Amino acid sequence: MEWLLLLLALLMIVGNGFFVAAEFSLLTLDKHTVDDAVAKGARFSGTIQKATKQLSTQLSAAQVGITITALMTGYLMEPSVGALVAPLLETLGLPQSLAAGIALGFALVLSTILSMVIGELVPKNLAIAAPMHAARIAVPFQYVFSIVFKPIIAVLNGTANRALISMGIEPQEEGAAGRSPEELTALVRHSADEGKMAEQTADLLERTLSFSQRTAEDVMTPRTRMVSVTKDSTAADIVDVARRTGYSRFPVVGESLDDIVGVVHIKSALSVPLDNRQDAYAGGLMTEVAQVPETLPLDRLLLRLRSRSTQMVVVVDEYGGTAGVATLEDAVEELVGEVADEHDRLRVTVRPARDGTWIVPGRLRPDEVTSVVGLEVPEDPDYETVAGFMMLELGRIPEDGDEVRIDGARIVVERMHGRRVERLRLIPDYLVHDRVRGRAAVGSGSPDAERGEER
Image (tube, rainbow, N blue to C red; front, top):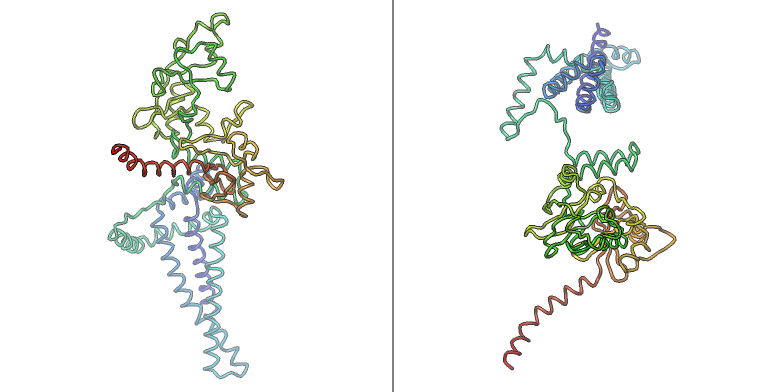
């Protein structure tokens, strides 16, 4: 009889393992993995899919099953093992009462160890390491159990749901299948850090996920750096400007920079016969140009550019004035990184900001930054890029907001992609000095004016 009770106790431990495996596999499984298995006709995938759509009920069933098997294990294991071990201890000369106490303690320890290892740890680790494999083994068994004990599970689950409702939380029967951009970004970065995804692929995915969070203002060329032509500029003038700058499209200015009337392409100027270029004007060669607000998200900006089959738009500020221009290339670069050719490697990558600072990609060499900005970034054999200079100065992998001083400026980390410094902001000291002098002039202007009036 004791051996039968012991066998039943071991079966309860195995049953506990089934419920634990089912619980963890349902929590670990991704909805799309299950749907894909169903589409392929994998064994038990239909049952697993039904269970994932009743996640709250199935987790309650798992808890009921774990509780029942744990109680039954203790109820069966201790008396059966005690009855089998006590006579052996008595044959060693131990008193009956002492032998019974030691046997009971041994039964408790054995029951705990077997329950933890076989009933908890092994199925849990299996479900985490191979959730679909564990689900195929355990979920069908639990699904039948949930049907048999449906009344008990319904009462317990309903009580728990009412407790949630009383706290102002709406119970959910099915787990959330979607992920927020932040969660997806964290998942992508973790995959790259673990070596499961190429760094370049991770960067592209991260850029894509953050694309809609950026605006036209983030990528535009500000009005102070725009290269434009007037309506009266000739085709010859346009060709000359294109030759000097490397640009192919130019905003056409009317009365002022706040009056952008169109855009002209170098191809339009080159299509004019050479002898007639002095008599062909930008006003007759230009095409219409769309206007977008500074706050327009980049995904909508890209859609606008594609729908209009245009390469350039004018970005306007809240007052209707021209803030700058944005191109299709500017938007695409936010997805794939800087795209530079032999004409614009430095011009495109080192970008002036509206406040007088400079936006500098971390991959540029110090001499490249120096040649554009005019402030010397130290060079050293220990590094090849500005990002390398920052790492050497900081003595660690930089973080957003870290800054390093150079002669005449500060360099601040503006954007990191994982462990890579993607973008820096160079802030010249003269900007700070100009602001201080401006405040001093404002503070001293009124007394001087008053003394002048008195004289």
